Image (cartoon, rainbow, N blue to C red; front, side):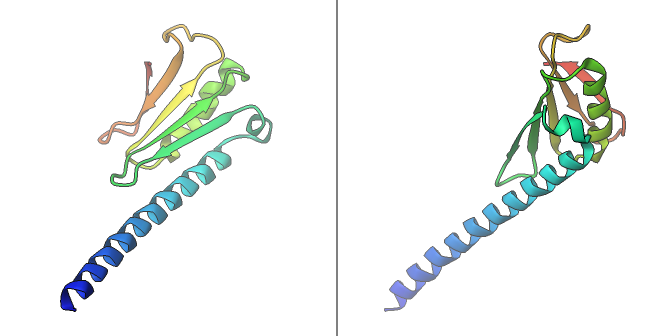
Length: 123
């Protein structure tokens, strides 16, 4: 009888842990969506496609903005506005309308841990 109780306790404990991790992941994804929505202007919300990938086990996240329908100055405005607001461990990738002069097909923004500046790299 005590073996069955231990087995049930272990199963329910693992299930509770997985559900707590999933709830935490979903909360982080919702917070990222709110940050992105607050950073986009009203006219850009209809033209920008947002994809968010948040891991369950680690604090890393990836935000991809498809801005092919936007002008180049709008793209840089969004990057400058959104980059500093993203939490640590988040990578922002932006698909641009046409190749930027220093990039091939997209812009990947990385915020170094030690610095507060943004660096644009070709993806």
